[in-house]
Structures are given as C-alpha cells and as structure tokens.
Image 1 (tube, rainbow, N blue to C red):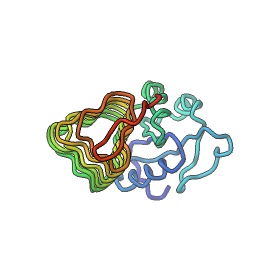
Image 2 (tube, helix red, strand yellow; image 1 turned 90 degrees about the vertical axis):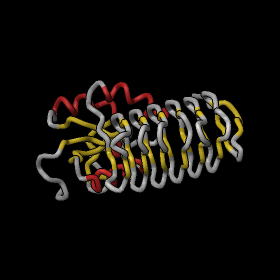
Image 3 (cartoon, rainbow, N blue to C red; image 1 turned 45 degrees about the vertical axis):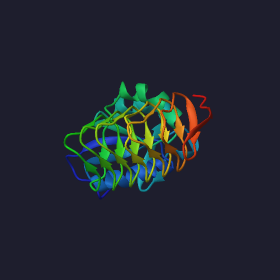
Image 4 (tube, rainbow, N blue to C red; image 1 turned 90 degrees about the horizontal axis):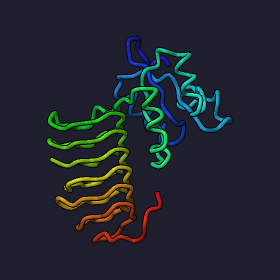
Length: 220
C-alpha cells in the first residue's frame, strides 16, 4: 500500500465487488483515509486482493477483526445492493463509525448538511440548503439542488437532475432520471432510467416513463 501515508484514519470497505472497486477509486482520489482491506461473504474470496488491497474477513467476522485491530476506526459500504446495505448498516454502525468519501471534484455547498457514510463521486453537486442523510451514494454528473431532503441509504445514479422536495429512505433514482420541481419520492422506491417525475411518488413502488407512472409495488 505504497500510496498510503502515516497519520491517516484507517478504514475498511465492506464488500469486494464492483461497487467496492468504485469506492476504492474515490478513496484514493480523496486521499484522506488508509484502506486496511475489504470484507466478503464468500470463503473463496478470502486472502485475495482487490486493486492491491487484501480481503481480510467475512462480513460476520468484522467484530473479531476490529477487536484484533484496534487501529481500524472507520468504514464505508462497498456494496451496491440496497437491501443488503439496509440490513448491514445498523450492525456496522454499532461497531465502527461510517466515514464520508467525497471526491475532490465534487461540489458541496458549505450551507448543505451531510450525514455519515456517504459516497459522493466526481462532478456531482449538493447545493445550499440541501440535507443528505447517511449511507447514500451519489454518482457522477448528478445534482441535488437547493433545499431538498435526501433520506438514508439512497442511491442517486449518474446524470440525475433533481429539483424536488424530498427522497425517502432506501430509494433508487436510476440513471438519467429527472425529479420535477418540489416533487416528492417516497421510501423504498425505484425510479427507472430516464424517468421524469412530475407527480408525487408514494412509498414502496417502482415507477418509470415520461411522465413517470407507478408500474408495480416494490417488494422490500
């Protein structure tokens, strides 16, 4: 790990798949943390390496890992599955402090409020008066405009335009979607690729199209 320097907060990444690799890129660019390693759910991935970092233990062995390595004092989720993230978050938060990974090319207003455990990629914008919860993902070229409230464990994919009022917990806003002025999206929803939200979207549904229409329930 020659790219790490002494004095940085040591963290682990939960997961070791595609989303974990994206997370590593952003951590290395931010250059605030030392990555001690990753975790996995599969025995076959133990003792392998991901982008040069070791897979240290299985997810259910994290408590033991922390007991044996007291210098690890933070984590970030490297898992993209929102249901798995939702299940792991309360357990992990009781063991370690979640850290924010914010790419230096992101624009975050000093008048915005940001929670913990968020991954914010390059060329994103969080405007003044916006509130972002915990454990959210904001992919590149997306913007949260002023005075919006984003819940916990929300995924905002790439090229999303948001002028809405609020997004509920555990919701996915897919690539290229647009949330209209002061529109709300409920919790545990999926807003499909390229959807244009012109009316309020209730909890626990899947919606897509232009204008976006509720297609079916989202079994959470």
